[in-house]
Amino acid sequence: MPTLFTRIIKGEIPCEKILEDDRFFAFLDIRPINPGHTLVVPKLEFDELFSCPDDILAAALPFAKRISAALKKTVPCKRIGMMVAGFEVPHAHIHLVPINGEGELAFSHAQAAKPGELAEIGRKIRAAL
Image 1 (cartoon, one colour):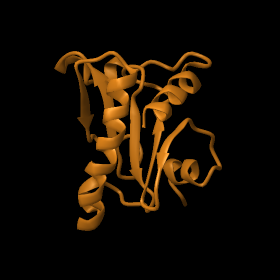
Image 2: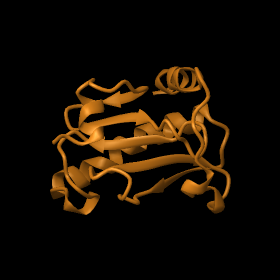
Image 3: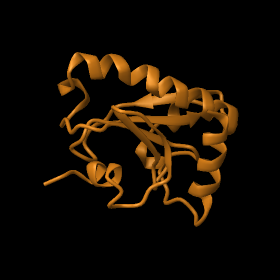
Image 4: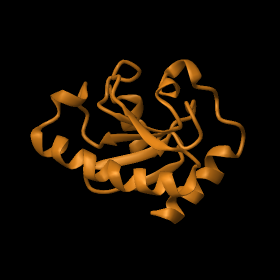
């Protein structure tokens, strides 16, 4: 059975897509830790990040770096934090989270996005890419 992320990539479940190429798909988290919280996932299903083939691992950070630069232009923050927890969905993924301090990089801070918030911030991030 396809993972939730595979269903999002295939367009079966709506999302606020940020960027896509032949190997990766990035979209806004619906329960962001902070506004702009973006998930980067390989299009192929791998249970966890370190089960990905080396070529996917090698390409993941440059793809994420492009999004990180756009996030910094769009969302006021000191840094873009990166987290790989891997328990939420059994599909490798990287969390990119605009933060102002290390203590913010925790799921305990996540809240459901407000109506229209994802579309507005998604538009701004895509414009900054």
